[in-house]
Length: 167
Image (cartoon, rainbow, N blue to C red; front, top):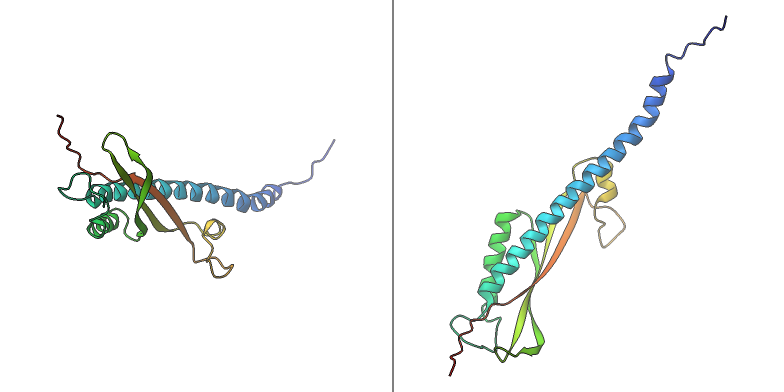
């Protein structure tokens, strides 16, 4: 008769060897999903800020104005207040007018775009994987305390009123 050796502890040892690797992999996958979700939220918030800014940055009541960024200060303050309502810790890094080099043949004027760049500092959730995926501090190689900085840049045309009379 063949006597089998006792193997009761083998499963526990294998589980203890594989479980940390498996949980680490699961945490990294979940953290990357969370970062992807926050990236979508950040890009949508940047789009909404650019939309608000492009509607308010144009000249009010002036047709074919040479200065399409006339109300840029008011537009930036409204966009920043809307951004803080959408994402509490996000801030606007760039809010400026970029002029086109070509003219629009329909309106016979040059148009401009509003360029908006926002940054959203996202606190990561899981230990270990958050250290791996956190943004690095620019001054040194140290990792900032479990925070991933997500940036979004949106370019939106500034709305200029057009009411040309046809003769």
